[in-house]
Image 1 (cartoon, helix red, strand yellow):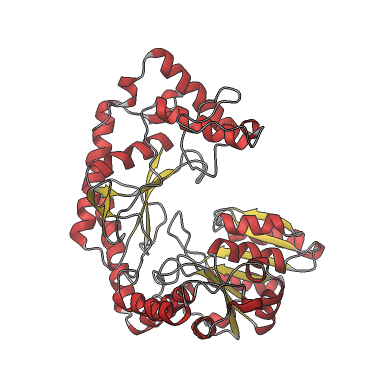
Image 2 (cartoon, rainbow, N blue to C red):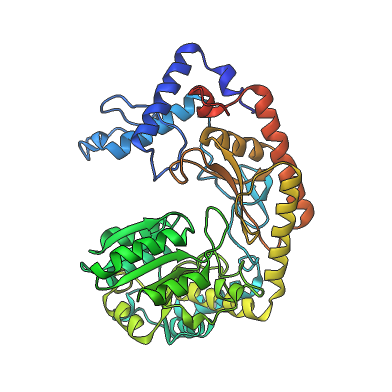
Amino acid sequence: MRQEPARRALDPAARRAALAAARLASAAGGSAAMRSPLAAPSPEGASPPGAAQTARPKGLERLESLRQVQMLDRAGAALGLATPYFRLHEGHARVRSRIAGQEVANFASYDYLGLNADPRPRAAAHAALDRYGVSASGSRMVSGTRPVHLALEEALARHYGCEAALSFVSGHATNVSLIATLMEERDLVLSDAFIHNSVSTGMALSQAARRSFPHNDLAALERILENARPLHRHVLIVVEGLYSMDGDLPDLPRLLALRDRYDAWLLIDEAHALGPVGATGKGVFEHFGIAPSEVDIWMGTLSKTLASTGGYVAGSGALIRLLSERAPGHVFSVALPPCLAASALEALRLLGAEPERARTLQANGTHFLARAAELGFDCGQAIGAGVLPVMVGDSALASKLSERLLEAGVNVAPVTFPGVPMGSARLRFFLSSDHRPEGIDMALAATRAALDRLAEEGFTGVAGLLGQGG
């Protein structure tokens, strides 16, 4: 059932509570774990509604991070906002999916080249499942290595023109382990301000100094290098090949020039770039016409274009030897399930064998940008390569818009503060080569209609409550 607009539904006392909670959430920095837009304080010692009562662990309710989660949950409820996250897909999440019994157009899954829906990676996984079982049943060092792991790593090394590659069971743990292992106390890590959490976590766990530079501002990066390079033994620069929130690219040629000028290493996270970027989807190196061997370290995930899960690093033989012996996410974790290594290997083969998939995805992105502009939407700096943000600004408004779109049969997730800076909330559309122009048109038209309807109803979100406009 469609909820009444929050602005109409709230009585004066509830509106004051929501306003206070929004201010508290902003001051506290919100909850990075839930990515929920609003917050309200929870009584001392209170459990979430409906939670089972337990005597342990005592004191958990005093954790500041838990209080922030509870603040966000309660103020969202006060504003009539259902959580836009953790939606349960009841089957295969293709370009059409089923959520809560309703078939919807799906723009929230990063199956960029449609390979997760292709029967061939699935058949490869089935064959490996029959041969090796469900689990590798051990870390790679102990008993977990199978021939399919080596075949996948050899194929990744060939793709990047590198000496070797190494797979990990988790994409997030790949960056964490890589950076924490490689960089030490006398070193420096420099990252783009829009870098993924996995990089930030790896930087924090390393003993290295760390600095960020404004997004894609390489002049600012050079100023940091000029001042800081003489003070550190090794310097690592980390960027994304395709930025996961904004859908734009780094300037790879300039980054390589800075790398060489200041004797640094360059790490590129290709999690979202492999598949969507480059004439045939090979990645950001193909987009710029640069040999991949020019980059020191490539990192990526298997969970997007490659129809699997986990991550990988590709680089020199010495780097891979170090990581295979010392990286915690490799040494102390079970190996990638062989069936998932097999599906990733087959998907990587198909990426090379069927370049028309990448071309179709890019055509979809071009169409999306053109249609969005006609409807008056701001897509920021997105180039049309799989990740397409529609800027909304206010976090509560973005969440409410996502809710209305789901009611209209379109599944697209919002990204809200603190996932993005305050005032830059957006809907983030993930495109696939399996999407069709008419489906994109329908989703964007539904977005325009839902946003206009919310404006008519007077829903202004947090900004309106705070007197800052829509």
